[in-house]
Length: 268
Length: 243
Image (tube, rainbow over all chains, first blue to last red):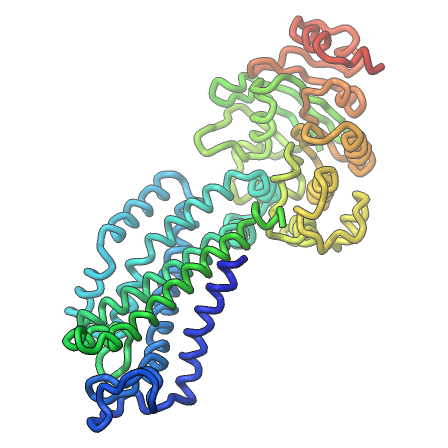
């Protein structure tokens, strides 16, 4: 329960920052202002400014959008493709299930970042290619979780009873399997979300993610590099933002798992 | 409708099993664990595990069930064929409200009866909005029974429906099965509890190591058993003591 609350608050902070940034930011996040560069904490700019005089807080707020956007799309792609694949693999005859899972392993063998860099090289580096690549690389983890959950559900008597009741495979998949593995999937989604956020930051850091001038936490980190010793603040601010988002989604996942696990929930 | 099974064989687990159940007849199938009782039931339902195949013949009325496609079979299941399983704790979907679960067989087979009506019939009024974990074992078994009886099946198979329940609840469930099952429906009642057989069934089949070793009216089999195994089974049970 504590995890759920802390996770919810942290994620809420990120979402709030992102939503608020559509209507209001303290300064224009991309406006270069040479007169006010490298201002420190406090003062007119709460988190100070970077080497071009851009307001850090405004960049963080707008960057939260990119972060969430990446997470939602990447996890969305992975869940929408991976979940049915996993359920299919769990419900079909053994040879077909094995085949799907071996193909799955093939995709799993590609590191997400490598795939994203490849995609970036082929389709041009920007946020969307990064998201799609991260999404594709995350499909296997959803398929795996969905399959193992499906196998478990398929071995229960209520599925046998459902079959004895004449229900079709599709009905069983949608009515009986999916609701009973949704807890697993939601947990997987929140963990994958955290991984996607990190991956986007890493890709932007490497120059394969979000293109300037769109603010991104990863690129803010990268730009802070050259001034790391003089102005550690520049790395600290986006670093903490990333940590907050990742920690938030991980805690949220843990909390949701405790809440949604039918065995645990039945005891409550 | 008559169910006639002849020469049913499943791997070496069920061997050359033949019997008939006429409309309205209540037949018990007894034997110890692993004797092939449940496999016989699953063969009739067409729900054998993937790696097992049944041979022989199972006819329901004019139809040969073993030759039916999965699609045709699933049309029969829950409509003319219904089954109640042993473990009421796991026989219901924990993520679905009870009312929705009992009406599902009706929805599939195009016969809509309300959840309240179905649940009333098994003595559980007002539970339609409950989730399975909010009900006791006996209540859940009633729900399972309501699902099985929803479409007034020609054949109801009960696979040890009372084994997981305590004795007083057992009696309630048995009474319910006897009263709720329509007169035209055939019943195949699998159990290893002879007292249960004595109270529910008119005829008994005794199974041992995948074969039917004795068959006859309940009175006959329980009072003057012919096969040695049946005698052992009787000796081991506390049927005499209970009488």
